[in-house]
Length: 316
Image (cartoon, rainbow, N blue to C red; front, side, top):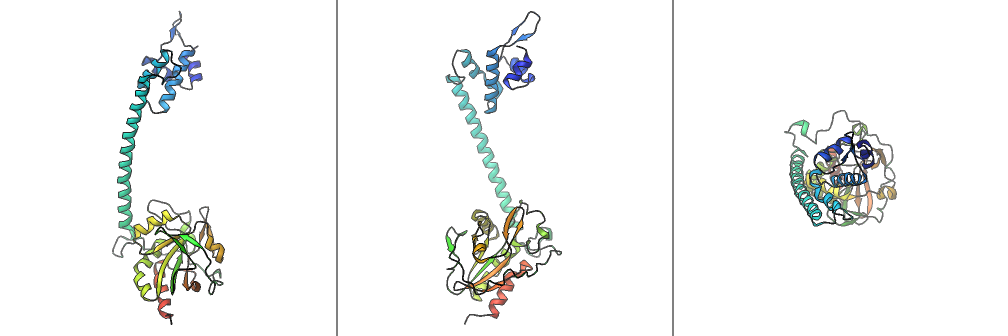
């Protein structure tokens, strides 16, 4: 058969066939007119070279496998030399994997350093890198009445995983008052937010809100909030990265199924193909919703708003 037919049947290019021939991996007969004449054995050899190349074995190192076939073995890896070729390829892959793993660890370290350096920046830092500086033209959310029914409702018997590695019952957050701030999603350095995020009223600002609760955590406790929690539909692993990066002194609760929204008819919205919580905060006293902050704006001042309410409404 001609080279074009061989290439077609073996699934390679004619250029590849010529290269294999230049390495001596195949040796076709020559017809009286000078044309190369390939046979079924050559088809099998070329297919074997292609299969081994797909496994990561260089073409130049496939000869032991082809010699095994030439020796009459049924499979190209029935010979000790073929097994040695496998081991050599595995050792090289192991070295590459270790090198890539090391490089990945360095990249993660750089990412974490940059993320911690630029998250919750102080007012004296570059505003372009200041996560607390919200755009001046963000749309202000309006009160659509979606939270009017919540005061006086009892929290449902619902268990949610937390970033502390435990399960938290939202109807048993402890005696006294607990602050449960609910937010859409927290951005992460290097990860894009849903398209049009800044144009959605009340969507932007989860990181500044978290930092606000962090910075006023002790003040909130002194004002009567025995515990503070954040809650979103993001996974616990995602939230744990946020807690570590922002050094949050409180737990985050994960509710990917929006179970609390279903139980309390909490407001949600759609963005980026996801259903997300609208931002609101529940003041819970002995398992009952005592007060609701909704809508919330601006987010970087929200902890101060909660603190002001707690101080204006001390426990008796």
